[in-house]
Length: 178
Image (cartoon, rainbow, N blue to C red; front, side, top):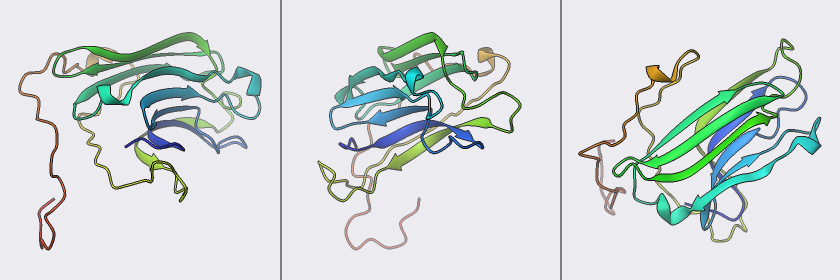
């Protein structure tokens, strides 16, 4: 899944304003690691934290993980993030910061933050290793503006699905259900 350029699994992006091109936060699969990166934006380049947390990519492959993020969207905001292996409860990655720039512009200026989960990859043809088709599964999203208790944890979960294997249809297959 990882690439030398970028292969984001999560982005926190500003919507509106003149500084909305680059994500504020990204959770990215690299060739050998998963990385949480912070970019305070063009108006506050001194506020960039860069790479703030990493974990080996191998710790994530073939596993269901639970990501919990609590974000306070302000110029002097805060973040707390944990990533746990759902089957064992093992902590794979964490980060917390009580004073980090997580907003672009001034409050009330028509700018909002929007969290985006998915696969966002560079189309750089010279990527090393070359990009290939990958499967990343997302499930059980929960978002709350008032209480983390509204989003119950799956840890520890019994009966976790096995790692996905042979997910692509065999050559020549037709009308394969989703």
